[in-house]
Length: 191
Image (cartoon, rainbow, N blue to C red; front, side):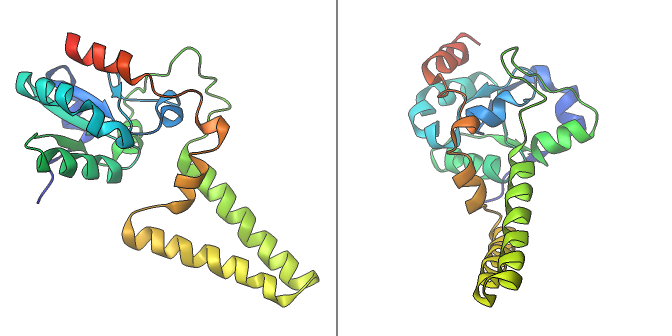
C-alpha cells in the first residue's frame, strides 16, 4: 500500500484544509509541532479511531511525526481501517527546514527541550566513546559496546526504526505528562 506524502511547501499553503494529527510522543510534540496539530501518539491511535474516522469524513487528514516514518506507519494503520490520510513528507524536520514556524506550548522551555534525534546522537556518540575508552584502558572487550551501538545505528537506518529513541522516549524528561487524549479527542470532535 502506497502512502500519499505531501511536501511541506504544499502542506503549508493548504494547512487550513487539513485536520493535522501529530503521532509523536507528548514530549516531542511539546518541543514544537505544526500549527494546529492535535497530539494523538501512535500508540494511542486505535483508541482515537472513531473520532479520526469522523474527522476524515469532514475533510482531509494530514499525519505528522519528526521525520515521516511514524506518520507513514500511522497512515498505513488508518488505511487498513478504511481511513484515508496523507503524511507530511520529511515530518516536522522538513517543515522547519523550509522556514515554517512550529508552535510550542507556553509551558515548554524550548532551550531545554532537545529533539529525539539530538538525544539519540548524544547517547550513541557517548556510548561509542565510552566503549573505546574502556576498551583502551580497562579491557579490550569493552570495544564490543561501540560495535553494538554501530550495529544498532545500521539496523536503525535499514529498518527506519530506532530502538534507542524508543528507550529514550520512556525517560521522565521526555514525558512531560501523558497526552491528554480525551481533551485532544474533544478538540477533534469540535472541528
